[in-house]
Length: 74
Length: 485
Image (cartoon, rainbow over all chains, first blue to last red; front, top):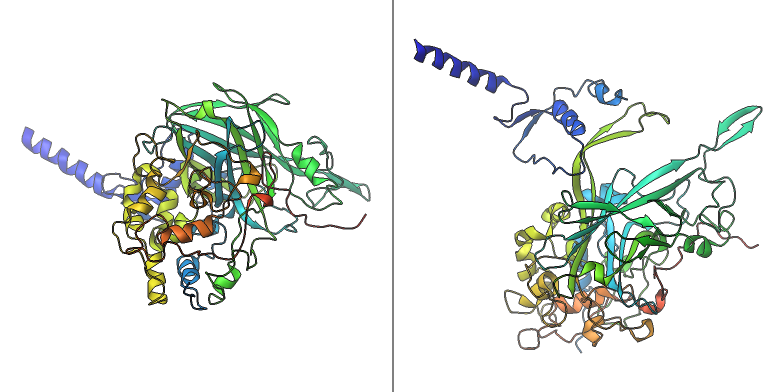
């Protein structure tokens, strides 16, 4: 029984990971979220994020309001 | 001396390396992406022991950006990017990693000048609405101007210890940048006005230095018009037989003069240096920019390097086209990735192909002479005591200064060891020097380098007489408008 519960937990975690739109584990990133995160982590001391192995999914190509939260943030 | 054919292989080779980018200064528009970012485009980098009388204990660094400025380029003219980070890095122990970095940040000061129009105050569209200068503070008629701050970072450029330089003349941590040379009705005496922007700078942990940031007349000389016209020139012709394509252009200079004692360490008199420009990694365009809120863009993320320049002409004619963007984003400590471009250079081979029987590429590989010239410095001249091969400009601060009148524009090739490649002075003709070096000028054996004494030239002449003999050395920029009084 314990083994079954552990197995189910592992499967659940794996499924959640595969479906994540911003999961660092599978190299797939939501572009809008990624850009917003970079703006939020503006720093004088940090290094830029390497993106050669990242596949960006841009779901907001038709959404002119995608970055309103950044543009409107005063 | 065998004459090269009309179709100069050298010029073709340069064109082949630069044609797509249309490069024109020693490193300008040389990479595909930097052509989209003129304000971040480093075009020339000079480093030399100051030859102004009495200043021999200083090193002058001049980093030129935003090249090919037409003097009449209003209404905005040529401000620096206030969202960018401009840096001059110094490696003083030969390990290819910066030990000292001077960071320049600009900010815009907008006055929003308005005039009454039928009882309504309306914002004007111009950069100035009256005369400016001659003092740096004579800016009541200026609508938009820039100031800048300089930091000295010791250690890693991002994680090191950072301190602001102090304006030694007026106090505070900011320095005024002069407006560009709009014309003599706006700025009657531009030379005096610009000179009022040379400031003493208190450098934390060091003796004072001097700074100037502003527009200058382009100092680089090169014959590119004919090169791109199917190489309509003779590379064995007179050294002054051709027009300087850049003679009618201005550029913006970031000049800083620093005590040698502030730069060197551990008894090694050799320093290496290069300049970079960086942007924030993320940028969002604002579809509704406002003058009081967010502007046209929002920038964010870490500083990401997009421009790099040490020795002249490297990214122009040494690095392959496919790697030019990579070079601009790279650091000297990782230059092993570009080694083949130096040990197996393409420019001499192109010459030999195009001038079969006349031009002969040096037949000795790897080209250790070019490794010395570009990656380590020359033994006994400007090679650090311990050096990691890496591309940067190297200066031996113990080499005696040559007064302007005594300088040879072919630098070390002409016996003037205070000149390029031992640092780089404004009057060093780096195009002619580079042409001769790549064709074997540093190789004694004529059997493997038959062209090692060929007086190759692009025909556009430059020497120290073209410049001032005092900081910041580059001369008053061309005016956008000159009218008789």
